[in-house]
Image 1 (tube, rainbow, N blue to C red):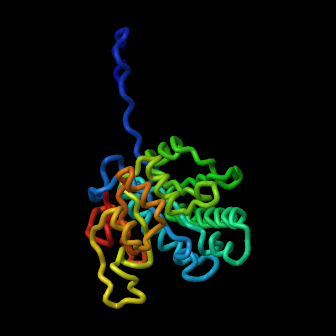
Image 2: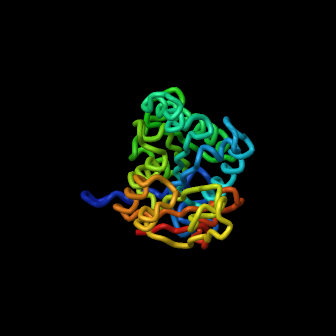
Image 3: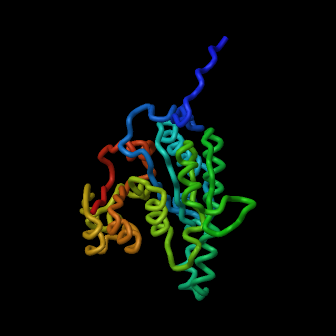
Length: 268
């Protein structure tokens, strides 16, 4: 039998509610190992989702979902931006004669297909996931609302941002930088099929060296092809670090959020 509560004095502060545990595993504030970052924006290239082919490779998506699930269960808040290059690339379609604005919108739809696929595999891992899109499509996703996205993250849900910025001429790299700033992420984790930023293209120059740390300005000035210049400028102007790492090495997302020395850290 519980004892009756004493009456609360007029004007006294209401008792604080007990914190709610996240929906996806560990209690709030108690990850399995203390990560360096508590909220991250993960940028995934669409080409990787296709396994180098046009379309979707379910095995690749499942492997990415398992890596994300691992860090979410450890208490890290994860938002995701995915490209659509495994379906359409607006700039390439333009080179073949298609009007750029229309081809960019086609690319945005490709990002939504990838977002829904990742959502499906994450939920198979038991991870509650929401997709928000910059183009309204209410039957498959929520509209993009930054405050709602933050609330989802605080509840331990993964939030996937689809349809880019909803505007032509903006890449999903720029979208990743923009969304990271809007939701208060601590870092952009830029997943690639290479180990990080190199002094030259490692596929063409066997003597290319991995750069462990570099500034945003130096990446732009040296023309290093990591992401588009708009994304790097946005991160540079707002002090947003970028970690470029190899997604194809299993467990690298967990290593990235733990602050292990992998890939290339780009800072202001």
